[in-house]
Image (cartoon, rainbow, N blue to C red; front, side, top):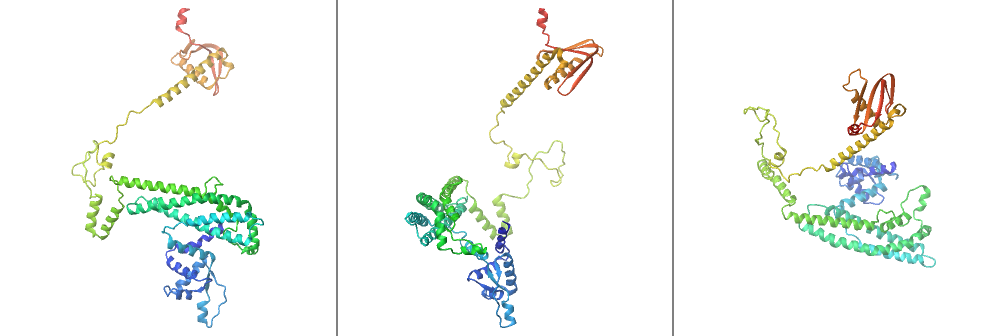
Length: 499
């Protein structure tokens, strides 16, 4: 993987500051098959535009990047001077030739709208149908005839697929612009509504035919490709010498898998046909958004692009004084102006204090953003706390349930308090009742009692000489020396009075 990425350094000459000279040198090499040139040869072909030393240095750089390779051709020279002229010769590498070809194509057609070769799709459908019929005949198809059909079919499909990608890339570049107006918008509207619709109609027409043919051909392809290789090996023999080769399109099963993926959705991620429909739909949505923007602009929300371009032209042709006047008139940005804002009450600033040295005044946000103190928008209604009240109510009910469960546990413990271990809530309730019992009583007491009528629990402490009460709580044991603990239900006044 790392070695493959190293090949990307061959693009370096297209991004350096003096790329013009590098491109000119590479164009000389790509204009001739099997070019074998020295620095002096290049200077002559470039009409002495660059000195020999500069060209020689750039040839060394191109060699280091992998675009050129040193020539191995023997040098024949009739003199020492001629030997120095021709001793360092260079040839174009396969990678360098491909990169320069791509660069020239990009520089020539990068911003052009490429026509889609729609007629090739019909030829692909016809070629696949004929190939399917030929393979169904007794004895099958002749391997050389099959090679002709496969090569033609993939050349047609490759050109069609490339033209579709280029067209939709250009369409996405322009249709999502928000400064389309007038004739420019009308042109793209016709382009999308007519041309793109024709493309999708053709794909919808021929895609089912292509799918049916590929479906029949798919299990026969391994045998078909094997017979083609046996009849015409091409460069396959070089594989025995550990030379990497790139087969013609259609000679490998992966090429057919790519063709199948264009029309079939085998992975669940959508075929290229589905993506074509989605791209057309997105382009129509962008066109509709531009149409809505233009309709809204008629009501005052105009795109200011043309006005700003005209203003920039005025600035470009104006002197300094006129440019300042234009800037003030266009943007309303005058010099510093003093606004009267009431100072803080705790600050006493003399009238003679300079604005430069005086404290900064806190300007309200409404005044700073809109130039007005008046509130905007509707007055907010009272906040609804119903959800918060319901949540607090649920929490209170849950706490009450825990307290009652703890009180029931204390009542159940009763005289067996030393034999049970209290839970956390029961321990906390016991300690609370104990603290309330001992609060405010004299050190010498005989009996003290406290109760919680809501929880129906009572705690009585009885001083008893030599007694020891151990309370086993959730966090440890509590030992009460000289005290006996009595737990039970709270005494009800009405029952006592009745008794």
